[in-house]
Length: 263
Image (cartoon, rainbow, N blue to C red; front, side, top):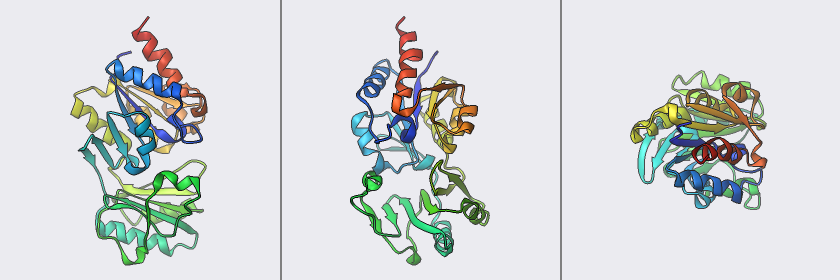
């Protein structure tokens, strides 16, 4: 198995339920990197919300904001943001919906939210600083992603139909939906990284669990879904590994990549 790039989602895939990376997983990934395999985190999170994971294991690249941005160090390899006009028009429509709760916007200028965030809520810990802003006044910058807490996902999909350059992605088990540019996908970003490193996509292994992972699970050389993944993600994958809380990614790599390289 000629694996040259490992791409892994973070939440509910590499990270345990407490958002940590276990010592065993860190050790396996560091062994993979020592063997010359590049490591990429591909996550729906904004870059700032990846700090804890990056401080545990320094990846060769980060695909963030659901695929809207990819960096190798300080170099931007891929970028697909919604323009200012589309961002503000979409924000206005989201605010008009009676079932809308929190609205967050990820930009180069920071992470913005329409309501104050409880500093004691661990769910927001990785996303601070979260700047409170009344979106009725509009933003003066492009947005990588707008994420809306909305109980009725059907409404969200209906909203997106008015914006031909925007696509919607749901998050399994959550009342959140993501609006982003149609070109902002993990797979698009990964493809650009592979070209930048001159590595065939057939030599990439991808791990994931959710809707926004399906495309990369299907198109990378090897796709592996964790056991706690959506049924649709499992169908798209070539293999199923153990759950995220059982170090599924690390177990699979240890058995099928590292042991094959060191018989």
